[in-house]
Amino acid sequence: MAFFHSVPGLAFLHRLVLGIHLVCPEGGACGIRLVCLLVKLTGLDRFVAASYGVQHQVNRQSLSEKITLWLRDASPSAGSSRF
Image 1 (cartoon, rainbow, N blue to C red):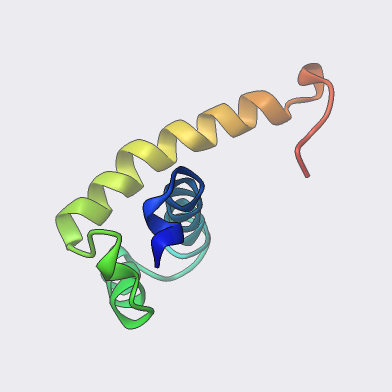
Image 2: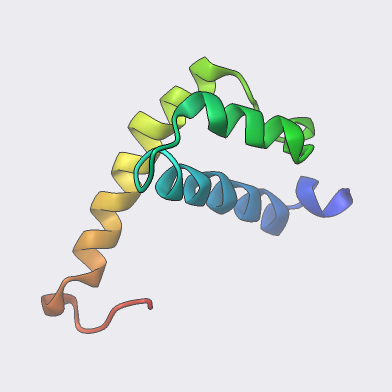
């Protein structure tokens, strides 16, 4: 539990939630309500807000910014991809 309160733990949670949003609502037929349910069922709601409003904000703001940055960094002109 202490891990999730550390800087690396918070970074992991942030990446995990963004990954869930990338795979579920953006990549498949899963909406934000199911993301909220996933956060609750996995117990991540002890560390991450599971409300629809917060997850909608994450999906629209943070995810869009991260995708834009990733596309910029992964472009052939950037040299190499992270994958």
